[in-house]
Image (tube, rainbow, N blue to C red; front, side, top):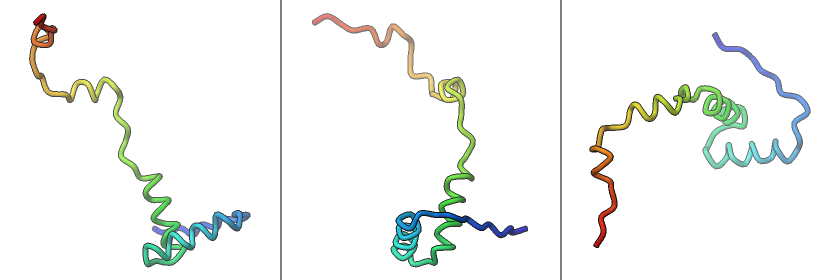
Length: 70
């Protein structure tokens, strides 16, 4: 279900920037505002460092990365 949202006391320069950005994307300021909110608030859940590290492929043993003397 959609909800109406009113934003008051927006600085003129911010409102103008929103209108200019909306025009560059070919949509209304209201539609641009919705897209900005959606992009910022509906991002995928951030993964922990442990989750990122555990998802990395096994690329060899530690000894494979020892520096060699020439």
